[in-house]
Length: 180
Image 1 (cartoon, rainbow, N blue to C red):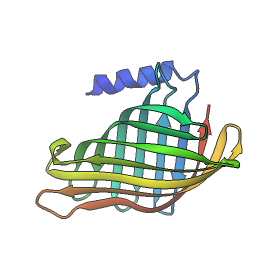
Image 2 (cartoon, one colour; image 1 turned 90 degrees about the vertical axis):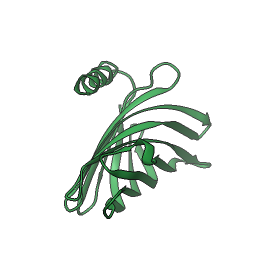
Image 3 (cartoon, rainbow, N blue to C red; image 1 turned 90 degrees about the horizontal axis):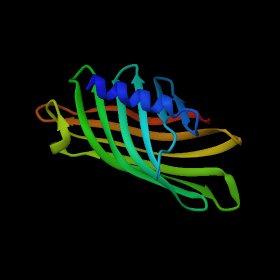
């Protein structure tokens, strides 16, 4: 597993000269960061992310997805993500499938709305976890050609076989997304 993550990191670093993005979000108790690699070939992207909640634990993600511009103003992506969850109840991991969309409002191309959803059923959830959900929505404003600010809602929850589930994050986040 360590060699796979190292190889993925090298692949992302080697392609960093092309367009990529980095997102940082904050709330009073949460810091979250996500990196999306430049597209390779027919829209293939790699993602790395992390979320730390001062009370509810940590979530680390590594994913692969295919993204493309559906039409002028709408982009979408589908893929899979590995989630690694650390908390006081029980650590867990899960392979989730899902996707996202980003839509620039007609007549206001600097304003975007979008959402994401990643879901792992019991068959792809490990360490006594029953399922995992990561859902969210955002509205953003492009302040520069290579930067935007956003307000979002994100909920990350993992349910366990023989104990209560843990909602690692459920609430508003504010942040910025940088394109390079």
